Amino acid sequence: MRRLQEAGLLVVIVLLGLALTALADPVTVRGTSVNNFLRLDNLAANVATPMSWMAIMALGATVVIISGGIDISVGSIFGLSALSAAAALQELGADASAWTAIPVGIVVPLAVGTACGLVNGLLVVGLRIHPFIVTLGTLSIFRGIGLVSVRAKTLPSLGERLPTVFTEDFIGTRADLGDVFVQPVPMLIMLVCSVVAWLYLNHTAGGREIYAVGGNEEAARFAGIRTGRVKVRVYALAGLAAGAAGMVSAGFYQSANTATGEGYELTVIAAAVVGGASLVGGRGSALGALLGALVIKLIENGIDIVKAVPLGFATIPITKEYGKIIIGLAILLAVAVDRLSEGWRQRTPRGKPPLQSWENPS
Image 1: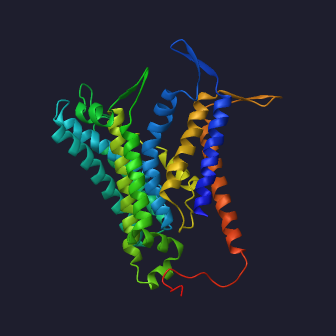
Image 2: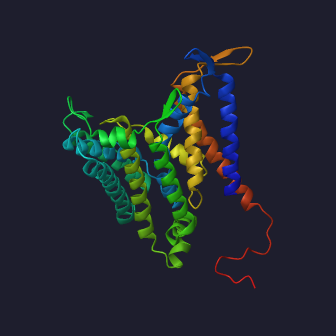
């Protein structure tokens, strides 16, 4: 079923690409008429690169959702991590050496994100409050910490710069491809995080424990799994992912501000759910999170480049405000499909139950 969902997402991505190619108007670039969607500088700069930090956060959100939880504070953790990275790097100065700037730029946001995730996990387990309520509270708390911890709303402060070895030579490294350039490091970091998440979820005991807790927490507890520790771990991992995304964003944009990450909660959860993560727990995958993020980013990019949709009898104008509506509809559709597939599985003919993983097939 998971492979079927991922294959379905690939079909959706292809159909979206074909639709956007057909609807996008041609533009003139350096004297040549090209499709506004299929341009390399559009696909790289407006789809793949900004998708990178969204996909990294979606990986963390997927891990939480697989365990049966939810984390709506991810945008605030992302913003606080980016602010922390910018604040620490600003203190080093623009001419800081790579041996100092790069470790600081990596460790600080990862530590801040992981700490925030641990707070979420400990509150969920310690207070036994629904994770939606806990992360709703910490969403505001983490955002408030960012607001009161910096004097200026934007970092670096006026007249200051972040170390160029971190921003331009590391995260923002450019690769020239003829007349255009791409910045591949955010995409490479996204792919590394995706592979690590896939290996963890599918090839480690810790990953299988997450699926077990999300599938049936009571059965997992009777099987000897320490469910409380698993829950704390998944929220810490989600915080770590948000910290990594904040690091990439701060380095790419060479700045961060107190509004960084606002509203990302909907987008990240949408990417995870569209990617096949079940809100009842027990199902989801790293590849699905990656594909879900790509679907959401294609929708957002399509809204930017397609100004109107001709229907023959009428033309519907498309503005940026439609993005929230479309993403909300995508969430509802993904949940509806998940519910229908769950009902289909429950209506399968009864027969001899399948062998469990601990049973001897002989």
